Image (tube, rainbow, N blue to C red):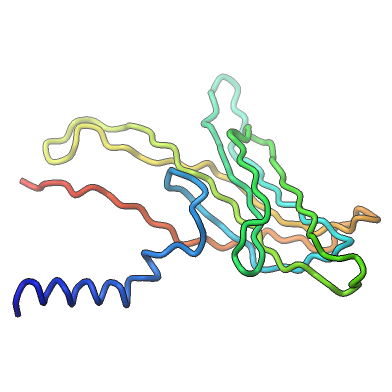
Amino acid sequence: MSPSAFHARTLAGLLIFGSPFLAHSQPASMANPGIAATTAIVGVAATQTARLNVLNLQPVIPGITATLCPATLEFYDDSGALLKQLAVTNISPGTAASLLFKPPVPSAAATARAQIRAVVLTPSTPVLTGAPVPVLPPIMPVYLSCNVMTSLEIIDDSTGATHTFTTDLRAMLSYGIFPMMAVP
């Protein structure tokens, strides 16, 4: 088999079998690699508001400077269109950030509901650690993500009562590209 035929078949295989891993279902909302998690689809009526909450679980330790905990909170519709977004530069330890979403559902349709899902992105922060090792680069970056707990609630506008509450999120597939290193 010629080298060009081999490359053509490899490319075809990658396009057929590797496309789920190479394609994004939606635009990336952060530049750094990190953790992305999503809720399932939930229905929100015109008389309700969705509230996405993110709590930084890092403990408050006197005398210790907390690691920055940025997060992006997002709502998407059932077709994958971004409905609302909030980028938070830092959620302090033991505190929370929230994003409210009121669906654009006509109030005349009593049973009409907007189908939405919530997404939380927490980018990783590169931290340089390590000592020189002959085979490895002198300093290896380690990426740290902040530890957050996420909840989604659907609130009745007239009473303020929470009708739906979930902390059940699923990790979204993400990947990074690492530079190749020469091995002696």
